[in-house]
Length: 359
Image 1: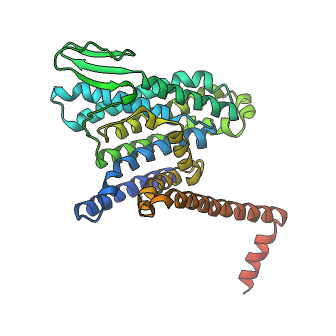
Image 2 (image 1 turned 90 degrees about the vertical axis):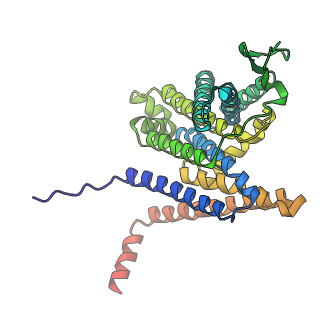
Image 3 (image 1 turned 90 degrees about the horizontal axis):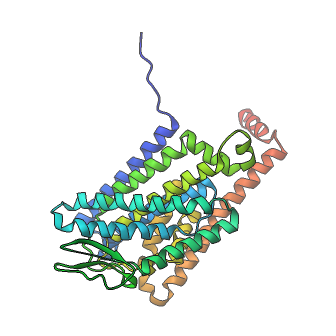
């Protein structure tokens, strides 16, 4: 008796393909970097690209999979960034190697951002549509303003945190967070390799949620809330699940992003950053994970690539965005009319096939 070969499911094939493409991209970029083919500006963008990919994929979990519009994603990114910087600073004198310290910082950023997302999601997700977008925008600005008044430092007596600039630090003092001045003298420990690992972890989590029972329930709540409730699905529970996981992943990306710069200001995580992340999702296609990855990569590189145009680079950047959106929606419009034509003339495809076979 011959054993039948087990075929991989479409989900498994897609997941393995995704991981393989990310791994191949990592190898190619590493080889180019070793051979000196990458410019210094592009080398400096490798970690931010990974961070923005994580942000775009995590936001797609809310916007594309859950169907809710969130404009406060940069707030969760800031929670992860500054909590990760604090943990990294606290562990700096422990002799812990950089990869382990980065892992602790990323995990801490994910936990703090996830808790913030859970607490904010309880009241926010009871709203819908434009109201939800406005409230998430407000919470994102509130988080940014809270970071503007937080002061944290360490000395021989331990860790100190307050909203008062005077922390009364003792010997061997070091400021970790300095209010509106943000985090200064941060030791940069983020690497492109660690960024790729976090991108793979993000893809693994999001793709598994999408193809799980919970993911199907989330999409059912997105497609028809009343029908989902009629079959016993707890809409608030599943939407809160997606929002919390998305916030935790944003915190993870924020910690990676924050530990890539020696100085980081709270104003970096303002409304413009939230809109930029949303542009990644919309441009790549709402609900399309790979589209978010490609859009985040291209739109992060594009402003630097256009720097030689000086004053006109942002104008060119905007024109490129408009052209890409027009091309994207032209494809969708053609697909719509093609489906509409097939619905109006259900025998059109059969006639076409019969004509081809007759020839």
